[in-house]
Image (tube, rainbow, N blue to C red; front, side):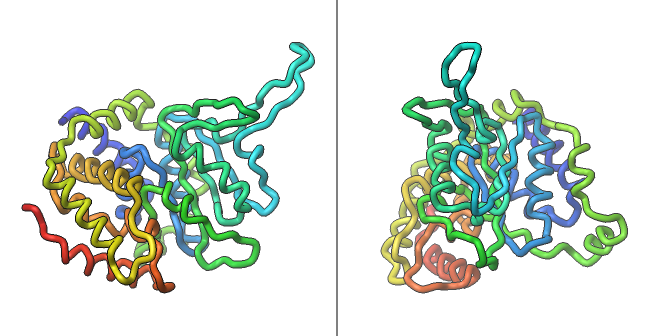
Length: 310
């Protein structure tokens, strides 16, 4: 484990040295990267959502594609389209930005529902279908989406099926006073992001993901604990639709990464519930329009009702 743990710590140290004051956000984003999932970063404009996504992308030795959500964005702008090749006298598929390892989808809620739906197959199956042909996406593949929660003009709410594809939901929050003061003095970090070096090679990242997936142990008691939590949520009077099986699989993946970061080769209950604010609320439909803080409080109360297996 030491070999892989040292790779992770080097990556974490490098990112935190650049994004000062965002240690929690960096940790949550890295959890999702190591678990091989997708993440949505949500907060008001100007708090560094895009900068965080770009920093993570440029720090990895991976291909990178960026999609800017707009009202007139169409599915072929993401997936690709066929063009006529005069040399072969045939239509040739020209791949879109989705065919990269890391995709930054900026302001995803500004894209129309039809365009958003183009992501569903890619995020679930690591492939896309165009004109009856299925094309595999590169590995690893990750979508980092951003959205501004309070914008209304020209935005479209994400459907429940799309929210369920995001392994984690992260809010950036305001930076500490000292960090914000430094930003004001030195200027935005965006111009510096493109000069970041890659500190983890592609093969190293794939090996690290595989190690976490196969070598971190989860006992039957922990599996039962997660399922009991999921069933309590589903049966709650405040919940319309609870956690899906897909959500539970993602929570297992995140729990393994949480154990790895703690330098354990086994999962404990805290790995399941300690990150519940990031893995659960956005995948649950409540009967009332609660604020996110109220949703988190409700979930904590439900989780407390489930007996800890240890």
